[in-house]
Image (cartoon, rainbow, N blue to C red; front, side, top):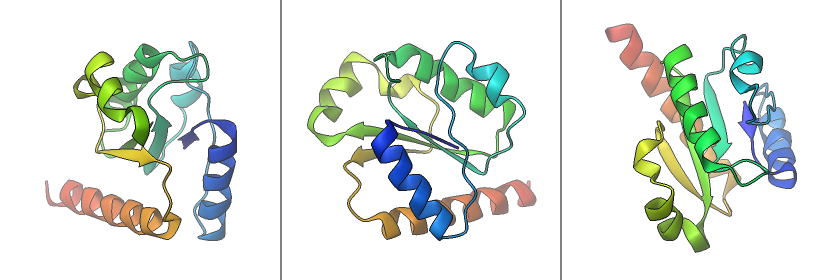
Length: 129
C-alpha cells in the first residue's frame, strides 16, 4: 500500500509494478481504518502527513496498521529539508514505523532492495516466534 503525494506515489507504483510488486493506493483520511481493514499488505509506505497537512491522522494510521497487521513493515517518508523540524514538532517517535525515509528518495532500486530485505526479515522473525 502506498499513500504519498500523487506524483511521487505514482512513480513508486510504477517502479513496484515493474518489479512485480502489487500495490494499492489509499489516502489517509477519516475513513482510513474502514478502507484499510480488508487489506493485507506486506509493507506500507506513508508520507508523514496527508494531503491536508494532517500529521495526527497519519500517526494514528500507523498505530492502526500495526494493530491490524503486526507483520506489516511500515515506512514513513519525510522531506529531508524539514525532517529535523518535523521530528520535534510532530513527534515522529510517537508514530509506529520500521523506517523513516528521507525524500527525495533518489535510488529507487536501493529502496526496492531495502523493502524486500525488511519484509523477508520480518517474515523470518514471525516464523521463528
